[in-house]
Structure formats: C-alpha cells, structure tokens
Amino acid sequence: MPTRIKICGITRLEDARQAVGAGADALGMVFHAPSPRAVTPELAAEIVAGLPPFVSVVGLFVNADSRLIESVLSRVRLDYLQFHGDELPADCERYQIPYIKVARIRPGFDLVQYAVGYRRARALLVDAYVPGQPGGTGRVFDWAQLPDKLPLPLILSGGLTSKNVGLAIRTVKPWAVDVSSGVESAPGLKDAGKVLQFIQGVRNEDLRYA
Image (cartoon, rainbow, N blue to C red; front, side):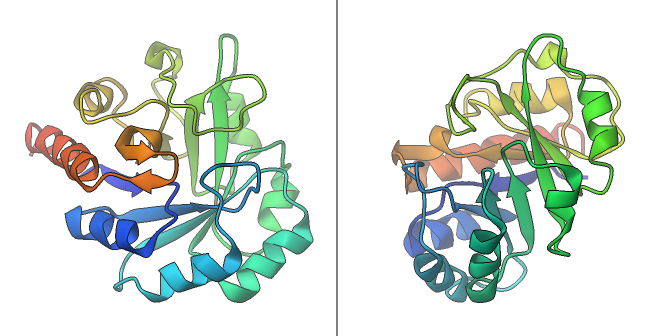
C-alpha cells in the first residue's frame, strides 16, 4: 500500500491547493490559538470550501473545551479530529467523528498500552516529546523506540523533511507520514517546492517496494 501523506498546519488556500496538486492525501488545520499555525473557523471554512473532492481534512485540538470543538464543527467540514493533549478516550469519542490520537514519544513510554487505551482511534500519530510543546517542533525522535507491532495504524511525524522521509519509511514502515515545519518557509507558510520534494521522496520510497 502506498504511504499516505498529510500536510499539516495549513493556513492558506493556495498552500492547500498546491499540496493537493502535488499529491497530498490529507490536510491538517490547527485550532489551538497559541500555535503560529492556528486558523479561525472562518478561515478554515474558506479553505475547505476551495478544496477538490477526495481530500481528507483533519482538525487539530489541544485540550480544547468541548464548546470550541462543537463551534468549529458547526462551521467547518472535518473528516477527522486530531487530539494533541491529555484528552481521555471519552473526550475524543464524544463528537461521533473519527479521531486520531497523538502520542509524544520519550524513553520509557509504552506506546502499545497507550494504543490499547485509545482502541477506537483510527490511528496513532507519534511525534517527538518536547516539554511544554504539544507538537510542530520539527524535532526527530529515536524511531527505534517504536514497537514493531501496534493494534492501530501508525502515522509518523516529528522533524520529517524530504531528506529523511525515505529513511523514515524504510525504518518505521508507517501507514502515513505527517509533515508541517519540514515543508515551510516560515511557521504556517508552506513552501511549494519543499512540499513537492517531500511528496516525491515518499513516492520514490514507495516505488522501491512496488
């Protein structure tokens, strides 16, 4: 199966269209005000309205109040919710929308047990653990810390770029890869050339096993 590709931290319609045109399967938008990549529901709705069909849209939240999430959902068509905080399984499941749970990897972290706790998630997204930062750090973690088998599909994130994504896929064999800062010219501003190179790097690796 080809490795799925998610371009995260989309803040502009032109970036979204370029990413889709280059071959991205999914786009992520951040609804967490402290993030430099945060978008308002109004802007997100405009971006989603301008997308072609068959592109998945993911909304990112960090320990968000349920009223915020419901407000976003009332205005923006989201295919998945992505939870980056300390949300419990019941918090993630209450909206009746497929969700992805993020796990920040650090020594001693039991990802298998974590996955069992979020067994209704569609996937686990693994990222580097940086104290006080829920994601988007651009840091690579030690992929050797990941178990060989998980009960959920794995989305690999954390410091991926066009230069290391091939090695990442060979090493981890994830269902999907997720990139944000690795394809930017500035936080929240995607570089079309970097996006294309990243996606080409993924597809070139996929061809090795075709």
